[in-house]
Length: 261
Image (cartoon, one colour):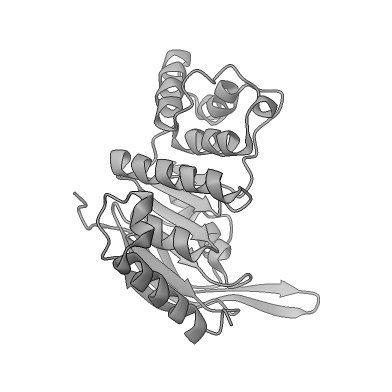
């Protein structure tokens, strides 16, 4: 069960980039609390600040206004404390390293002992259903398998928070469905707090305990929707009236924010 303890708290976060053509207001007055064990999806049109906000949590961007806490620390302190794992849109695996070698790399940098690394690699490969593939190279795996390896790498040092920037956006629908199922099962097993960026309404509804709808630039949160769906979610749940109603609510939220036609 979730403990409902705040893990990420944003209070009036704004971020303005200074460019040669003038300031670009990427985020404006974003306030949000994410509790322990939440699966939160961020959805909105391109350029609405979904990824930017995720990057501020990960200390990859610095807000120009407001306060952001991650596990009771500043984002930079949380980064140094290894409080989160980050999964990018592309797997970003080194082709000259095996899958096990890619997963091992951050553990090596962090100074984990060899025996500990081996144990962690085996555990996370099993978690993402890639047991037996550790000796393969990235080019020997499908795109979906490579993305699972990327998730395994982010899980290897066992951070409580997992940040995912549209990790399945480039995959075909069949593979995406399979990975959605696998991710939901992984979340149920680990109960990690997950922040997930997506452009897909069905994906956001299927995965999330909370859906955050964002507006076009300057990025603002226009609606926060708590999901009434049960934790157990077979793919067939997408055909139920409850799922369809929730998807409609998200779509209406996007329209109200002038994100979609």
